[in-house]
Image (cartoon, rainbow, N blue to C red; front, side, top):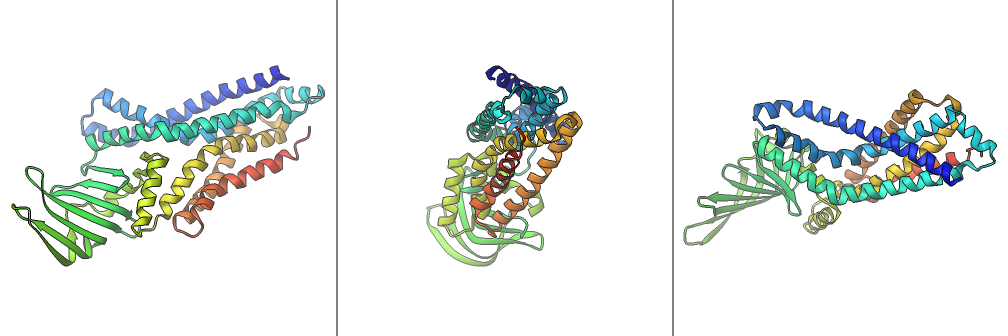
Amino acid sequence: MKTLSKYIVSEFLKLLAIAVAAFIMLFIMIDLFENMNNIMKNNVPLWPAATFFIYRIPFIVGQVAPIAVLLSVLLTLGILARHGEITAIKAGGIRLLSVFVPLFITGAVISAGLFMLSEYVAPITLRKADAFRRTWFSAQKRSFGAEGIWLRTDSGIVNIRQADFRKKELHGVTVFTIAKPFVIAGRMFAREAVWKNGGWVADEAVVWTFDKDGRAVKTREKGAGVNGLYSPEELSGVEDIQKNMNLSELRRYVKNLEAEGYEAFKYKTDLYGRAAFPLVSFIMVFVGVPFALKTGRHSGIAVGIGLSVAIAFSYWVIFALSRSLGSNGVVPPVVAAFFPDVLFLAAGAFMLGYVKE
């Protein structure tokens, strides 16, 4: 039985490697077409352009691994069933689920590996990819850290603690006016700024101006403009650079954000989601095994791909809905992050109970 389990796991890993490689190539092709105009327009040399796509690979692997695992499970067991090997296992008096235990263990190991990848590798490579974008593509330089969003403008530096581009609002805006040679000439702080009449405007702002002797003058301004920032449409996506942060950095950012009185539902949902998402690969093994055994001899490549798409789409719909509810504070972020995993794990366990030994 050990030899049989090794055979099944080896076939699964072969198909998994092929599936992951295919998905990586597909994603890179899409990225290439999306960025080709920028690459050509900015005359990016071949090797820097290639490294940009290489830096994206760890993130892509983390995203495609669950559906690749599901597809590999369905195809592996589908091919075994089509060749009558599942029937032979039953005829030999071997319990099916005991044969597939190593497959479940492999799924757990993959999930653990994906967690390590998303925690220690992907944030670093995504920062490098983002640095490439800022260097070659972006007109407005920006970065994201534990203190929020940092933007470089023509007149200085802007720090934004939180952004909601759907509502066209910025929260906790600090503007540093920089004079040559890199001397702070002024500072403005606004708790909130909104997009009005083609510009960012704060209803009330505290403004400090500094003279050459270092003396500071503090004033309050009504309807102060935040100059140098692009429109919400051009800035959209900058708050999503939290994907470049690992768990400890994101946890610290959420803690600081809440300490200052800002809502952090979106970031807390993403924080818990970092722990929940790698588990999906293991769960997909749990779901894929009973599905493959149910289809029996009718399984094949077409059936495996069809089931993979259907199951992955179902998970994505529930995942997106749950994340949306968590990000808007309708349900607790921890519930929003883990609900899809718990639901599909329970469904897989339920279906396993009906597998005929």
